[in-house]
Amino acid sequence: MRIRYLIIAIIAFGCLAYFLPAPAPVSSGILIKDWSLAKPFGDATKLTDDKTKRIVEISFGEPVSLDDWLFPGKVTIFDFFSKGCSPCRLMRPLIEQRTSEFEGAALRIININRPDVRGIDMESPVALQYKLQAVPHYIVFDAAGKKCAEGQPAHDAIMAWIQESPSREE
Image (tube, rainbow, N blue to C red):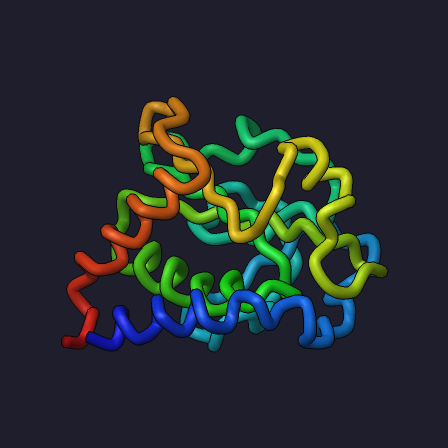
C-alpha cells in the first residue's frame, strides 16, 4: 500500500523539480562516489573507482561508457539521476534497497549534473551523449550484458521488481 502512495507522490511532486532549489554541488573534479548501504540515502563513505561494488554513483555529468560499468553475471541497472529531480530522489532509495536485497543485481547511478550546475543539467555531456529527454531514465542490462530495457519499459520493469520486494510493507 505504501508503494502506491509513493508512486502517487512521485507523479504529484515531479513537476515541482522546476521550482525547488537544487542542493549545492556534491564534489568538484570527482567522477565516482561510493556509499555504504548501511548509511542513509546519499551518505558517501569514501570515493572509489571500484567497479566490483554493487552500488556506485558515477559520472557527475561527464561522458561514460555503460559497457565499462556492467557487472558480470548480474542484472545491471543504470539510473540516470539528478539531485534537482524530485522523482529521482524519491525512486533512488527504493531501487537501492531492492538492489541490496537481491544478490543478482547491480546498480549504477549516473549523476547527470556537473558539479557547478544547479537544477537538472540536461545539457551535461553525459545527458547529451545518451540523448536524455527526461530523468529519471533507466537502462537495464541482463546478466549476459545485453541491453534488455530502456526508458519507460525499464521503469515499468523496475517498479514491478520493487513491488516484489520481500521487505515491502502492505
